Length: 452
Image: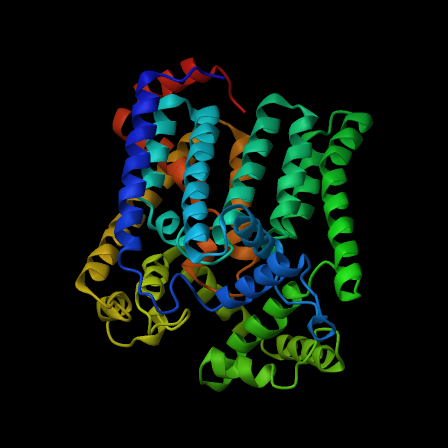
């Protein structure tokens, strides 16, 4: 590992100052009514309060129903309560500190791949990234999830570079742990098992050792949490949320494309008789979903394409609006709700829900930031392909593809946040190559001395 230089400490200090100043400015704009909360926040806070007060997520018989959402984030909030007291401000303060930890891990991961200079660029890009600034001040599970996913990516890249199975143990542990916060990475475990088997295809014994190193922590977490749910809720099951997102959220979107109306109204109709995910009504919902798929698979593909476009092109400013506008709820702002020319729709999307002119300015800043980030991201990916770093390209490409396409049951910039740090790493590399050119590549090769 390369030694830290004086310029690295300066870049880290400057980035931390920028991040904290921007965080204070956003914090000062948050209204007192429903402060820091979005649609899912009340459920997280309720479960955290139960655990904090009673030491269990289900202290009474009438609370025995297993929740649709994962409980990892509620556990995190309860720990914050135990350490610093039960207050919104202790949660936000802890999350801002967690966001800075994410920035440091991003710096270390980028440095491992591309050297010190690119790592500095990545950290500075992080410090002025609106996604990290906003979600640090939302009572939502996204930031904790990104922390765990970044640790997974860090361990996976360590394994690709050093080929030591202990990093697979860490990768499996953090990836499985992330599913306790949100289930989005659940099926990426299968992708990783296949990828590990292919990467280690030297002999049978090395493949088995590598697979066991990854699968063991995953299995322990899955079995352990399922047993927890059995003790608390009486059901040996990991979660229900994967079914809900597919059979309710995505189902409702397809129906809205076919019948008209909003997705929210369709969701209310679908869940009107839905009391429990194990009930007969839920089984009927599944049959209805697959029956619709058989006759309207074109609409399913259209809904999926719309969601993918929202994930890549949506703005984190939309979440900022719900944070600073007490009358706005998540999901109300959408580019597709506006009509007219392309520019009119973009302008309407930016202005909708903006409670002050500075929010509009921030939105245009984010558009410019995003365009430059995607440009440099492409330059970085092309540079990696030219350098024939096949395993790194394959891993990062699969990661981005999975979190942007495979889970596109809903479309929002909130889901791009799951791979935003990968975009920043590659954009930092692309910016370095773009401005320094071949000399930059030679410096990185001299620093790293490896091609993966």
